[in-house]
Image 1 (cartoon, rainbow, N blue to C red):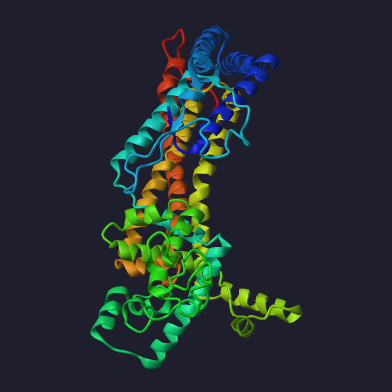
Image 2: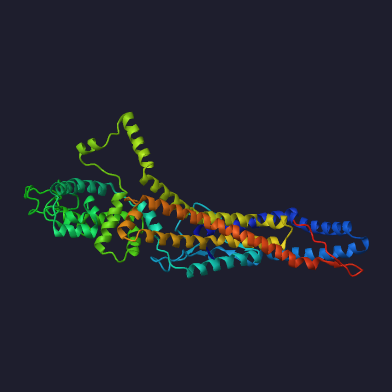
Length: 514
């Protein structure tokens, strides 16, 4: 049987384990028999108080037969765990919904190593748990219905997931951080200073700016600096760089008879060389800090050229990596962190950022990410609570048939939240692609950069409302439908409890609602 989230694999087993424990306590204490005693007393007292003695006994017997039969049916099908319908841990599985990047996601089984569930948390689950037939059928139908609906819906593109991964990308290796700082001070700063000073204009530069955007000159991997003579092709590292071999023809400032261990590469080769260049290291750093980011990025943008995709992944990594200074004079002129004044300065900078437009956009991005991540976990915990408390509800409802129907509708409604969240995800992806039709703008949304803050905030608010509002609206509508269905069921069952008196008249004693 499939469930709707990884946590639900464990919450289902533990929920029904708690169900069995509570049911055993109710049986051991005799509480499960009290509803039968209540049925006998009520159906003896009410006819005796409202009709003559001549017909009260017949009415009592008729109503007792009717309600006791219903109560026995509820106990057999919806209260007593049955060996015929067990939940077996090895047969439970979770299959993530398909996406454009993964049309056939792999199925996750109970005890898989994808998380610490069942390892350091939710330990000690019983392998096989007996479940009442009715609830087994309700859960099986709900899960099958959900998966059938999701399979029929259009595929989502996982832009939100890519945005979450983008925030995790960073350079964890301090040696690569140091190399980025060296590249910036040796190549980018001199090249940018020269570009701003000379303001060159040529068809090649105009073509690069038109293809890669006006902001191309604002980052270290600029195509203008890489492709324009006199920039990266003539600039070199200021000191030997680890991993780059000494080349006598190039590194003429060193004594050939006593060469250094490493050499000083030209900036264009230093950035572009496959497997060894700085860009390749940044792409690897992205996948190490946010596993699967580069692959998902390529799947969502298959039309982009390889060069463009590599640049965007490297740029994303740089955007989420704190600056590292290699020149003491530069660091001294740009930072001040000593003493009380330094602490006050840092606090004021943090507050200014938090209240800025970018800060607001980032806060809403974090909120919507938290809502999306927490939603399936909340669903699994709510279902576990329903399963655990079912024995008490069934007994306190006096084995009501309408109560059994209401709870079944409630379980179906909560499990259907999965479909609503998939629908919200699909709407969210299409809103993003509609409001960010150009990939450069979409890249700004993914990396939470640029000046499109208002649109990001609006999108995040709408998405949050969809993830929270749709389940609330659905639950309210289904609750109304469930109450109406329960009332209709009671209206259908009431005629069976009626009795005809000796004069041929109908005596209609409707039991009081529980």
